[in-house]
Amino acid sequence: MRRYNIWRPILLIAIALLTNNLVTNVCLLLGLAQNTASDIGFIAMIIAAFVTYGRFTSQNRKRK
Image (cartoon, rainbow, N blue to C red; front, side):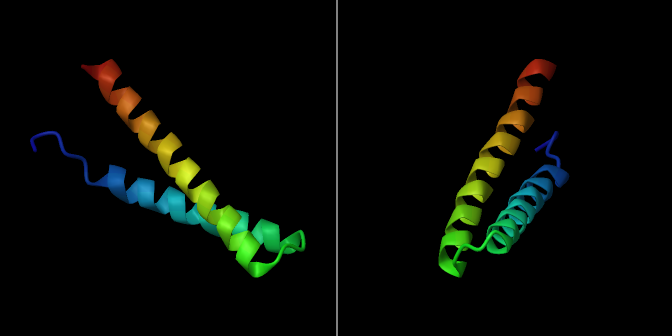
C-alpha cells in the first residue's frame, strides 16, 4: 500500500453520483417519468464509473 491514493476512489464515487443526478434531472426536465429518469441516470452512472476507472488505470500503466 505504498502508492495508495485515497483521492481516486473518492473522485470515482463523486463523478458517478454527480452524473446520476445530472442525467436524472435532465431527463425529468425533458418530461420523462420519475422511474424512467432514475433508470437512465443509473445506467449513465455505471458508464461514467467505468470510463473514470479506465482512465485511472491507463495512467497507472503508462507510469510503470
